[in-house]
Image (cartoon, rainbow, N blue to C red; front, side, top):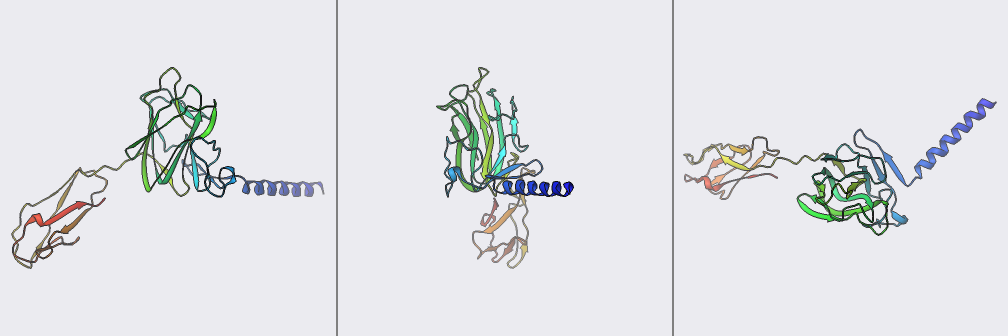
Length: 265
């Protein structure tokens, strides 16, 4: 009888634990090397996102997901101190930086504010565009705050964070977490290699009316990420092109200047 009661109590406790977890303020989701937390409510339980830069935000808001500063997709360059504390990872090395990329249309940088020992001019570069934020606040040791927020186009973005004003006198900048769109992904910082030039294998061609031939395009550098070429004609009354058989002469005269090639971004 005691065993049965014990079993029933265990089941009740398990049910209470699971039920409480469902009603928690957030849902935890784990993937290999990509742990994150998905927000299920807004700050102060408002119907829409209400958190602003400067607010304490212990959990991501609805529509956001949070990645810890220890996520393996974040690359730390230079000298960093890695901690499990509420202020996260930090650096006093002016040559340090961190990099990552993400997909989505919004980002928040989460960290701490202090009245001293923090930088007032942290640089964040998103897709080459430079912004800045401060970690100096009116109240000392305020943790898990929104330091920076930006809404963007929905695509893959490349982010660098650095600070040239830190030094060994304990002027630091820190990262506790990164919040992005709940449908987005945090990825390593690996920008594609851009195409620098496209050239044709022939500068002139002798063809009779109604015949066809192919032109080959050479894309440099060889290891460019996107080497796809799209063909078009500026005057299809003379030259007609398509993607499989790029060149067909409709009149006897043909100028290769009439053939346009361009990189497909």
